[in-house]
Length: 404
Ligand code: MN
Image (cartoon, rainbow, N blue to C red):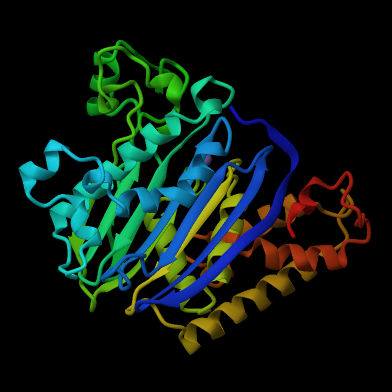
C-alpha cells in the first residue's frame, strides 16, 4: 500500500489539444502519495489507414509501482490496433467470426464492424498482458506492479467504453449522467465467483485480503493458478467493452478518472461540477485542474488523474455564469477579509476555522454544484495568505499552506 507524504505534491501535469471535432484537456497530480503511479494516453487520430478520424483516451492507475501503468499508457493502443490476429497465423477466432481485427489495417478502408472493434480491444488487453509477463523484472517478481485501465475509443459514429479495474468513465448527455463504466471490485458476485473458482478468497473486500481490484493489467502474482486461462485467474486482464452510438446533438462530454477522483466525488457531482466550470471557462486544462484541486480539498489522499473530452455539443461559456462566478469570488474574498479583521480572543484564526465559518454562511451565493466550498478554497486561501501576519514563507509548520 502506498505511503503518504507530510504535505501533498500539488504540481500538475497538463495537456490539451483539439481535433476530430473533439477538444480534450487533462490534469494529473501526485497528491499525498509518496509515488506517482497514474498514467494516461490521449491520441487524436489513430495510426493506420481509415483510422484518422478515430480517437483514443485512457487513464491508468498503477499500484505497487508505476511500471505497468507507464508501459500500458505507451503501448496498449498499438496492441489494440495492430491486432495480432493477422500475424499469429492459425488463430481460430478470426476464421470463426470471419471478421478478425486485421480489418483495422485494411487497405480497402472498410470501417471495422462494432464486433470487430470490441474483440480487437479485448484481444489487445490480453496480448499486452501476455507480452508484459515476459519482461524479466515482472516475471521474476522484482517488480510486482499492476494497473487498472479505463478508456474510450471514439469512431465517428460510436463510443467504445473500455474498463478493466476501478477507474471510471462517464458520459454526460442531455445534461445528465447517461452512462458510466462499472468498477471491478472483488466483492462483485461475478468477480468473487471467478476468484473463488481460481482457489482464492475475498477478504476485507480484497483479493486474498490484499488487492483491492479484481481486474488489472500486470499483477502477475495473482495470475499463476495452474490449469486456469488468463481470464480465469484471481485477477483478470479482460476488459469490459460497452459500445454506444454517438448522439451528436445530445452528447456533451466524457470524463475518465482514477479512483483518487471518484473516492471523493460521485458521477453526478463530478459531471455537474465540470458542466458548471465549462460555463465559466473554455480552458480545459484549467477545468481539469479545478477538478483535481477540488478533490484534494475534499480530502483525496491518492494520486489523481482526470481526462475531459468535450464533444461538439459541450456546455459553452455563458456570460451570466462568468458574472455569477466572479460575484461569488468577490463575496468570498470580502467575507474572508471581514472574518480576519475581527479581533478574536483565540488569536488569528487558522484557515480551517475560516473554512468552517464560511461553510455555515447563510448569505452565501450558490456554490458550484458538486464542488461546493472545496472548489473555492484557492480563492479563500489567497486572501487568507495575503492577510495572515504569521505567514511563514517557506511553509514550514503551516500544513495548510500546501495549496499552490
Ligand atoms: Mn488510485
